[in-house]
Length: 613
Image 1 (tube, rainbow, N blue to C red):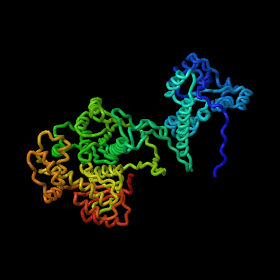
Image 2 (image 1 turned 90 degrees about the vertical axis):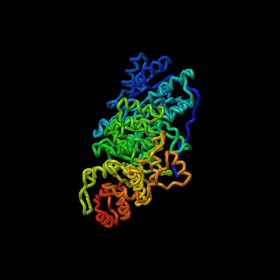
Image 3 (image 1 turned 180 degrees about the vertical axis):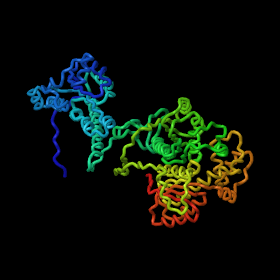
Image 4 (image 1 turned 60 degrees about the vertical axis):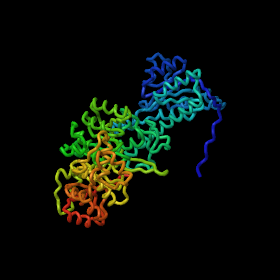
């Protein structure tokens, strides 16, 4: 049972309340000139403090200092300015309540009808003075939140305005109501005010929790809707929005297009992947994302002449950045259809021209060459999504989510996967070439941002198979392995020799090659498939596939958790795997090591699990 509830205070609630007296005390003085002149034109009596009062006087407004009104000066280095009964009495008095009115008359308190207040920018102060505890403490606003809460509580009579963005709406409201505000308007403003103070207190609480030896059990985080979204994961999931968190700005700018909920999930995860991969390798990095997992990822290593032909870019200019994108897209080009792309560095014209011809929803990158940006903004009739990432954005240390009415909190997975994670080689064969290390780093970072369970195969600086979201680890190995086989068989002479009719589209050629490799078509599907060709291609036999795949070698594989049995290794060897990275820690570690030794593989225990859910 809870304690007693306070009874309501009787008073008169009018729909329209004339603004006769306003208290104005703001840190952010944007828009103050127009607002001050407007209030002066309406004959509003203005109470103000310090710099705000000086600014209003310079605009020609008649202003009474709060200290003059209260009879109490600002004290304690400005810590106490408005914390006075004559201020808060004027905010909290119930209009039409005879007892309140008598007390106000006795103490010389006037009704305050409008409060214009905004708060010290605490998050900015912390960012600039992160290690200066005393300075951060000094930038915690006390009087502002107190006035905001008091005004919002008494919304029956008082209008609270907390942001320069609200000034035009306030002036419009007063113009339309003969200098008054309506009850509905005041309630809306009060709701926005309480949301602000809650957000502000959340920022202070979160910062303070990081400064003490015993953080409080209550965790608070404030979400501010920056962009309404068309819907959530599905059309019936409304409302939906993109939110800034904890007083921070968004980690990217929307340059072009209208991103959706899943687009943004892909973009944020893909950006983290390429940003980390670029840092770890020192090379341009690219990723192709679909449904919050990478279809492909790669670094900017040169393409061979054969690569250029297979990936259909033989006549294209290929910078290092373009090479990274082409490799990422061609790990699994069927799954990359309609993807979201991430690039770790400035997008150049060569990359933009290649992306222009692919079916894709959008891109996130830290910068764009001017011509490249124009190419991308014109894609899909202007609907292609272009996001400019902030490479210096500091991601909050803690992550929060809600599932089924429960709240979850965890430290963000900020462990960086670098070459040092590959030092613990546990197999008889110890050699790890620089190329092998690069591929294992690539594969490990890629699966860090892949829905678990996951494994990834890499070769020559590109993912060639990603297995995501399987309950069984060996199923991940087999799923990703099937993609590896398909990737490699695209280089088979028979696949390259397919004679397409003129006019067959690029993605249709990709899909037709994959189905040719898979070969498991029903007659109705085969009839449709044959329409791509002038004459029916000879089948690619199982024997031809197996023979060609025997030439696959020096492939790397990484797993987001330990291999519980040797079966994953027994399957991986069929796909040319020579290098393995996994956390280790299974009771079957010795069995798995023995399997690697049998096949002449080099395996490193990373001691780092990389589950992603």
